[in-house]
Amino acid sequence: MTAEPTRITVTGPTPYDVVVGSGLLGEVGAALQGAARVAVVHPPALAHLAAQIDVPGRLLLETPDGEASKDLSVAAQLWDALGAAGFTRTDAVVAVGGGATTDLAGFVAATWLRGVRVVHVPTTLLGMVDAAVGGKTAVNTTAGKNLVGAFHPPAAVICDLDVLATMPPDDYVAGLAESIKVGFTHDPRILELVEDDPAGARTPKGPHTRELVERAIAVKAAVVSDDLTEQGGRELLNYGHTLGHAIEKAERYRWRHGDAVSVGLCFAAELSRTAGSLDDATAARHRDVLTSVGLPTTYDGAWPDLRATMSVDKKSRGNRLRFVVLDRLGSARLLEAPDEQVLVAAYETVRA
Ligand code: GLY
Image (tube, rainbow, N blue to C red; front, side, top):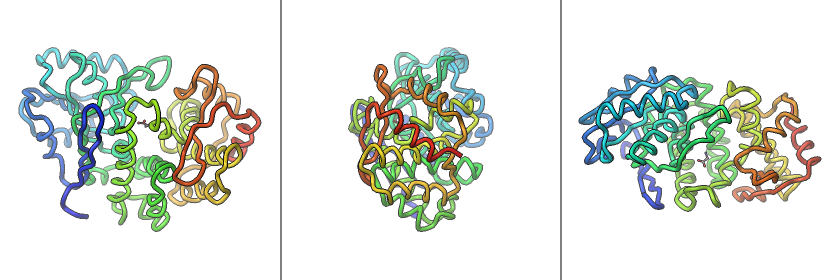
């Protein structure tokens, strides 16, 4: 692993760098110039990492683990803590954790005084390659997941690859689904790196880890630089997510996001083949590469329930269902209101 960090710049209304490398926790302070107070938000298990964010005026704020933290009551506790500490517009929030922590802390930063700086320190593969980059923030409500939030780009994203070593193996593998997704939609070299050494891809110690992470971040950075608010190209990052989100909901969010997206990618590939122009070999490659790293490619839920959930997917417009499909490797587009029989047939191919 090279010692020098890589800086991937996200452009747009408020440009920032995503820094990737080793031993980077010391970089956080550099992104917080002018802050007199810094709230470091973290789940209990990451208290030791949060303690390494050594900045003046630090306030350590512990939140519940996982999705349970993305709740308005937790956001309210954080707002109260910022108020008690006298946080002003020049102060800042640091999120240390996975996607749930960066979503929550980003939401609190977006809303406190109508927006203070946030620096994300993602500690999971999914957080690094997806959740922490692009400025989406959210909490969950009874109406659903991520329906309340704001676009609030971070001041920096610090991806210290060393912290990936502490991840549970199955969570790490689930994060690969998002990297493989952008391998199909934007950067096929990612697929070649996984196919070259699937066992290596399953672990942060693998030979291609840094390149896999950097390539996936580079895709995300380029896409959100052009389309922060998801009016165009950013929608294509939802490849595999329409069925994936429906599976997550059917499973009451006990399935890992990446596992659900993995099945969703196989479904979307089949839809791309039958309702579009994707060739058989590229469609089959989805199942092969996802299986090679141990991700699931089948699901046994009832179609009517999944179909009903998909109707209220965030990509839908009015009553028209929209899917992301591939025309060919590296070229994605939206497909509106496909024939119901085509959807049912595509689902049959992933049904366990
Ligand atoms: N996770 C998809 C996006 O950030 O747009």
